[in-house]
Image 1 (cartoon, rainbow, N blue to C red):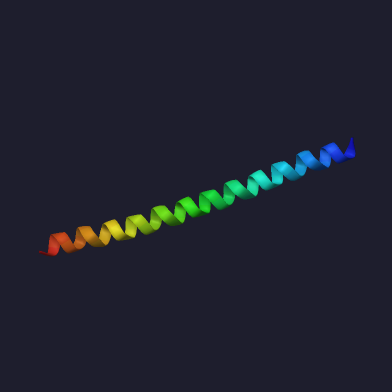
Image 2: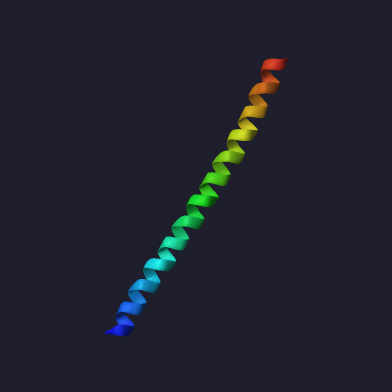
Length: 47
């Protein structure tokens, strides 16, 4: 019984970590894309 509980807690913890990493990666990718898009927009307005 304890082993089963341990496995459930471990899988929840790993899923939580995976979600956090995914969210962090998604946020970083979104920020980077936003920065690039902003630079392109500024350069177009300058012309």
